[in-house]
Length: 261
Image (cartoon, rainbow, N blue to C red; front, side, top):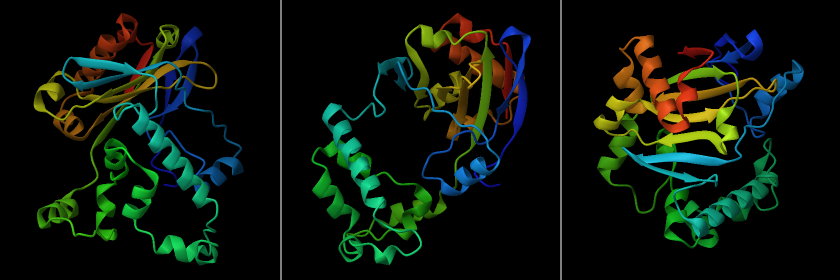
């Protein structure tokens, strides 16, 4: 299971052809050294995720906005601060040998620095600081907080399990969303029953392949995924395509092929 679960499926693509897509893990980044080595060993090709164009976001049911930035909802100056902080952390990481981190020239200084200290030295806007505080719930027990988190929060963090996911893929004759100036990215906040009932889709991305075969990949997540888990694949397909149609136009509702897992 190196790099995540895999589930390859063969789907129809343009010109009557077929291509293999994956309903399991799909993305890797340069920081994932082990899976990158596996890819190199087997000479498997990677290509960059397409991000050009406008990205769509639905914050509440019917309230749709668009943006062209990677970080959308925290404001221009906060986005710049987060970007610079990420670059700074990346630069610091390069100075720390993974085998013997204690040999880093800054080991003593950085070992004595809390996240709060780094945050206050690197960020100024309140939105950027709040974004920086976000962490995966299952690592909270490994972080020492001063002052300590409230008891209720600590209990909640221990009881949270990894969320539910359902993934789907839809292939098309053309990447019509790119032609319309869209990146193919859609983010929906489906955290209430009304939005989940209308559609469980919370994330969509461009999945055009290196062979230029057009596709969109999407996910049902969290409450949406669990709420729709007992429904049939046909019902899930209908809900997914209706969502794609409402954001990307009628062509999105007429895929060459479709798969869901």
